[in-house]
Image 1 (cartoon, rainbow, N blue to C red):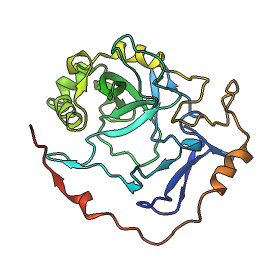
Image 2 (image 1 turned 45 degrees about the vertical axis):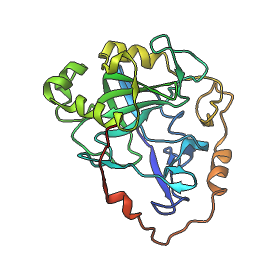
Image 3 (image 1 turned 180 degrees about the vertical axis):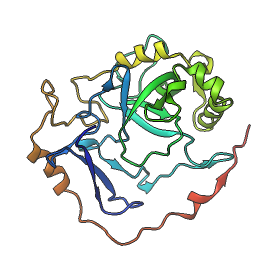
Length: 263
């Protein structure tokens, strides 16, 4: 997206760590709401962000401790670039006709399978190739399979069947990876095709109500009741605790391999 930049607050691997997004005027914006869903016809933006005011990037936290992605043997961390499609929302009050479950109250997740390891906070244009419907605690959690339009091999991919043909074993590895943290899928764990995927994304576009766990604060969506002025956005940043510039160490468990135990 032209003119967007990021600003880092404090240091990685700390509770205070944040990455804010700014427009060409240096004003703070929300990557969920102020970045358009489309980069071009049938090309979707993809970005990493969170549920907090201005949807800043922050370290995952569980039970007041920093959370990391475990290395589930034979994989190390995520096996794709993980992010979300802006201006989408999986409605927790709507029963999905395909899965029979309501949404998980998050933007639509995207798993980008190109050759480049993207940087934290990077915004890319992607082609949607397919989609997987996961069920987590009786909530629908869609995972879009996509490829960066700037990937040198992007032209070879038009549908999920191209992934099966050109990256043999990749989709199977993806299923194996997510099965270790989630056990239930819709459609018998079948990856749906591009047309199905685009129809799903189009049904999940911007809503005008505040999600239970998502801040809808934005600076550009004119019809949104949650639009704020630049000063209100800056106040979110100014209210953060003082930066902790001392080096933070990563727990030793982060670099361990974990082996899945089948029952």
